[in-house]
View 1: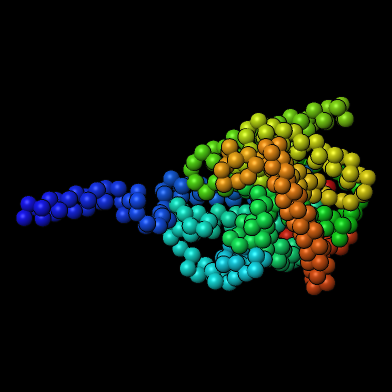
View 2: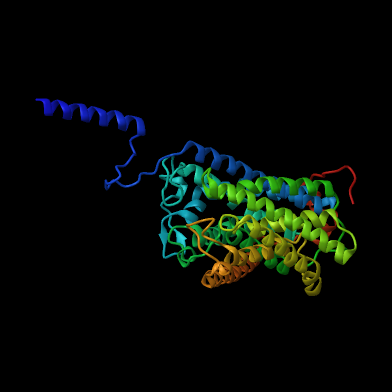
Length: 443
């Protein structure tokens, strides 16, 4: 009887302990699997980060809008906001499942999660074990929104609005979603290869940058002489919004409120500062004056280049990545574009494409498992294989995005017509495409 009573008291004590520590606690020597469990701090951070990333698209609208002629500024804002609406519906209906759904031969997700079927409040431990899958889906949606919006910097002031809508929908489905699955989706062949892309240098910036180059080549040059930015303060406001929102873009990609998020936050800020100052110095060296436009362009180049690396490199390495970003992007924007004569209106290829390529390769140089044990060491930390993996990933993505984007642009041109008429272009897209004017005084 005494032994039975002791057992009873022991079981009662065990029950009390379990009620305190929670139902998912595991015994040290037990075989119970680790169960995904929502963490409110992680969830709050990812939801806040999703809001920050969404803010980047209006920020991009102001950044691009300030750089074009005043007769086209509303067309830029309209295209960015249209991407926010159009891609949201595409993502909910089938985009999310194509990018992150159950794998099909390493190339694409299947349609199991179409219409967000079975995507709910429970975590998906394959992607984020401490937040609801709906939070993960919403966070990734904001990446899908801004990526096609980046491309419009190459064809600003000359694409028809219906063509923009159709191209955006097709491109998000046939280019962005597959590449997102290749790099980030469970089973994706580039992920299995060992490619490192913490927050989208490959998935976002290389794909958008190569599509931008294709668009510049397909549409050709703008009619008439180019002109300086019509509203630099507007562009500076947009650049500041991008810098602010990028902390959600990069630090949010840790998918938790943790040390990795803090590292991504710090490296993002440091690389951006280094890149902005480097571009100003280059402006002074080659053009005798440091310019505001140059500094904000450099800052954006720094943001782009640190994106794939921010969760894998140290703060000191971020300085070199930011400086290198301004160097290579300055070269393309100032000299290469002039040499080959393509009209990349707002340097979407020169900054996002080239910056993304540099960032992906720089990750293969400076990545270290001292920062992220789940990553890999790069060339400068004794692992040249990782640089080779980054190079292969970069080349595959560049070729695919350029060829697919070129084909889609030709298809859209055949179906609805790609470019506005010369008359409409001279009048401006604000009036001819939207019957509105941003200002009372027109060019």
